[in-house]
Length: 162
Image (cartoon, rainbow, N blue to C red; front, top):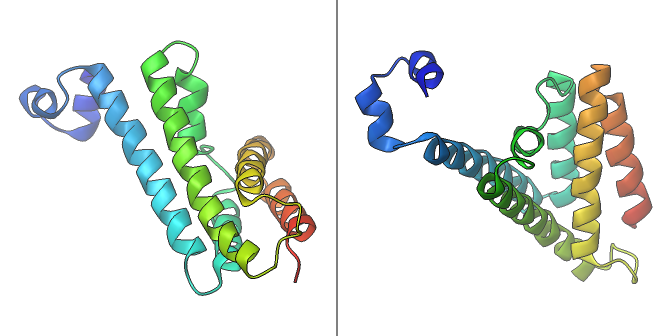
């Protein structure tokens, strides 16, 4: 908490007013990261070009950062899931919300007949999110967006009918 206080340039009373302890601060960070990610993805997926806009958004982000820092929610999962059951549950809920946002966009494609008949939008959303997480890790360690681009584009090409 002391490091956060210094980095945020706030007094202890200000910090402890909003976050009585470290757990409250960690929970707020997880909620913020999950909400931000889900909102960005939902916005792209429900826009005019749906999955294409979403694809362009995630690829552009990977190119700009070369995945430096990794995924904010995935990184928190890697750091907290094994030692903090409450944080793990919040991160899992964030991933569930993220999957639901992707699924909502895919359901539009499904209704338009652009997904193969045997593809369930919820299952494909889980697959896409798992692909994003793995591809982010590869891009992060290779400092190249190519693994990310390849994974996303290949999966979309296999799953979506023109």
